[in-house]
Length: 276
Image: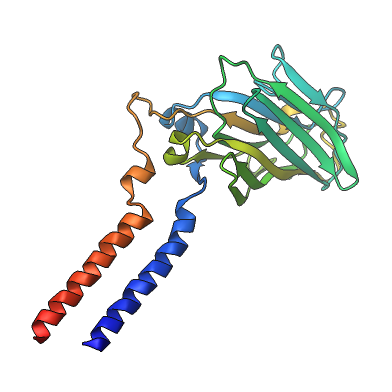
């Protein structure tokens, strides 16, 4: 009988340890992969766009833009010059101030900051920043863009308002003559959105590569470009029904532990009766 009790104690003890480890992953913000189809992502999640960063080959004008519609004319925006260098990796960091509806984008290289862009979103447009998209574009070969010209945009880390940080290590890459567009979308889990969690910062890199023809010197503009789109999916779905939080669907670790302990005790009692 002592052996049986000891065995059940080990099982319960192991269960407690495992649940303690699992509970660490239950809490903290989590991103979901929203796929590569922008139209479907927007439709399925009732998405509202709240801002856009756009970097392009440029030419005689600016190269990096931050506003509601990126580089599109007629919209409030901030912009800076960038002299593209073949295969050079540039760093970017986007920070979000939900209290003041402001966002900031810093562009840097190994020697330091190249420039900073600021944008204040209209309060009637903004709710929360809890989804985003990464997009690259390289048009078909032409006099402005030679074949195999590539542009790549990567995201390495995302931080959230619940003090969670996640390493993402994802990228999109377009190549002229091979892959014109490359897209990837991400969205916070329903539980996080229901709890009011927001993205507070994101960081990554971008780079352009060409052979003989520098698209910037050819005034290629947005023919070779990248975009970081900021989105605000609501807590409710497209039909207006409230999304059930993941926490409501999944028993809390403490509840699961209680059930397992009760099950273990019940098994012990049964075995005890049989032995008697």
